[in-house]
Image (cartoon, rainbow, N blue to C red; front, side, top):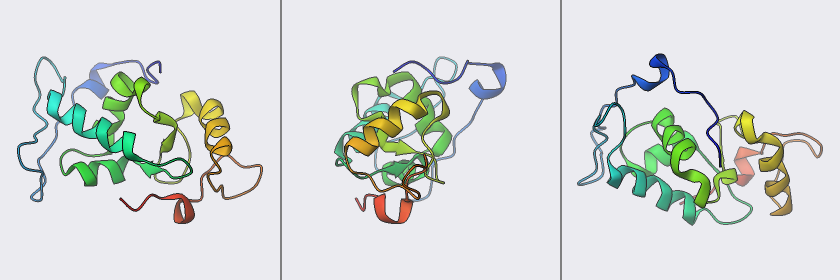
Length: 133
């Protein structure tokens, strides 16, 4: 999966605070100019791999399950490492797939039977489609 955004100074200078309920041993430490810790990348990708067909999670949902970072950090991991996992099952909080792959994501989600808000729309019905991990 190609990257959705160009890397700029503004979007590569993010900082992450570890949440008080952070997962044991996981941290999102700025190393090598914003590259996340390998354990964090693995944690995000393992959550995405477990999302069943017909279900979705938002970037924020994944961050909460991992216990460290936030939606932007999950998006960074997905844009750099998400090609080998079912990336189309990760959507924005409003149910819309990432803009750069929206057409392909909608096709794949429909083929899996994921419920959408409107039959011809491009937003997933998050109430019915959210995976309760």
